[in-house]
Length: 209
View 1 (cartoon, rainbow, N blue to C red):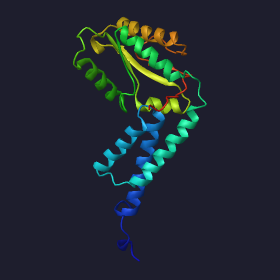
View 2 (cartoon, rainbow, N blue to C red):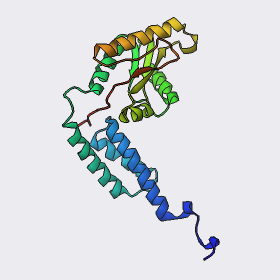
View 3 (spheres, rainbow, N blue to C red):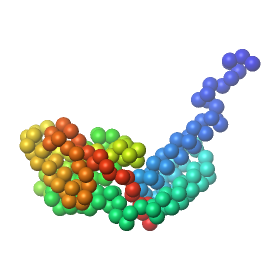
View 4 (cartoon, rainbow, N blue to C red):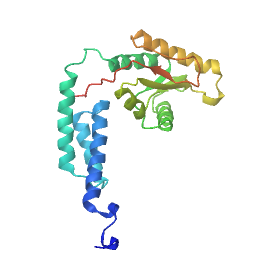
């Protein structure tokens, strides 16, 4: 059989379906271990992928999701009553009270994070002077945490490029203090050019619901 009789790999419908299924399963696994969505919400996200025409094996992905959630719930039973993610949640809640817009999992990139901060500031009911600083982390940061590499937080004064270094540093110091008060180990050199690190943070966020 000549090469012309072999369809290109990307035109092979079975291979394409297999790749789409693998890609969706990998995404579902991330959603589950990140820990922000309930089982019903994961199911709805899978259905959204179906509606978008992603072309994956829906029963296979949903079965994978169910088994992964069951595995995670079994693992959760071995976790401490208060996890590092619980401590992080408390620190972020305290930071909101102190004028720092602290956001969890704001997308996949730093640009996504800055856009999320802007959206939070412009949301209905948020006073113009409610916040003076921000901090966030993105999905890539969670991936590192899941690999036992700690978590990095982006932060700064809301003035961004117009703010003085001392204003960025003041926001960073406030964030570090809130994290330490919750018992989290913090590493930061005091510069706005360096993200705040939680080098020992263990990513253990329980599945809601």
